[in-house]
Image (cartoon, rainbow, N blue to C red; front, side, top):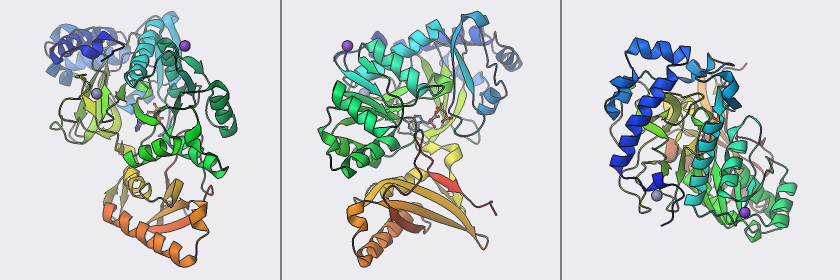
Length: 432
Ligand code: ADP
Ligand code: K
Ligand code: ZN
């Protein structure tokens, strides 16, 4: 087994020992910002009072609103002149949060990202094309510097412009791409529409992440593009990509515990959930100087997977993200996650790459409408067959979420598509 970083081979004892020392240092560093200075003082937390890892729970949680309230200054813990970069979250759910980095922060981020890429077999001989948006979004520069750190020839293609992406892949024999899953599905379908076989491209690995997606969507991306797709998880508040990543076994995402403390809590009570249960992921940075963040409530729902990974890394594995707590839909009193609907849809070969969940109100009753793009070759079939397909989709969604949806079969490429993270839900319930 080859490793990029010695920390990948650490035992549980070594990880815990490092975490305690790093947590103390992080608390000491965080106290330099007025926000944490005050918070930690109120909670009676000092570096010396951290004696075991359980002491992390004495640190108050930090919410997205706490960070938003610090916009645009952030929680800086070094002289301003030491900062060399800022990023902001994509703002998918409101005012963005801003994060600042020193050069040493950027170096350790690039190391973490390179570690992820090396773990799935990417080497300096690979040609890496970043199809994610650059700019404030961390999926651009964050992965870019990781790929360079690893030594790959790196093509900063940016998002969108499918023709150009494909030309770059062909001309420069790109072997590895970073691509948002909804865009990967679109790219594959677009090539197929033009009568080309996307699997003939030289791509062998895709890093997919930045938005929730199902196992079914991953398999579809792998089959269509003829490559291996690895789930990449991160968020701006914790740097961006490079926080947790699948290894070659594709059985959950190793969260890098030498750089972060990950906890999973009950989003209502704030208490730790029993191991293996789903809850909200809470993260603490352990190596960041410019802007450490303590016990950040990610709003992302997942669970720790039990057991050891055959790859030998003991860094704990997270299950794929079920969705954001903010994404949960309540329809007719039932809690629904968009990914439950995606999971059903992606199981139908007739279904194309795009769908949209629309919530409407009809005489005070909630209506869950699912608009589904159908691949051309099926769309042209006779009405009876389409009717049958619609009924089967309706039934399968009902079996999954226990609410009967209204299913609209629509033509390929007729739903709005985005270059960044896909918008899967439209809530029209409170609109006139
Ligand atoms: P925003 O919250 O505005 O989208 P970020 O760009 O920081 O800002 O995105 C981080 C969020 O993206 C995560 O909190 C998570 O909800 C989502 N995300 C990132 N990677 C994945 C992934 N692999 N699977 C599911 N969701 C992901
Ligand atoms: K190289
Ligand atoms: Zn593993």
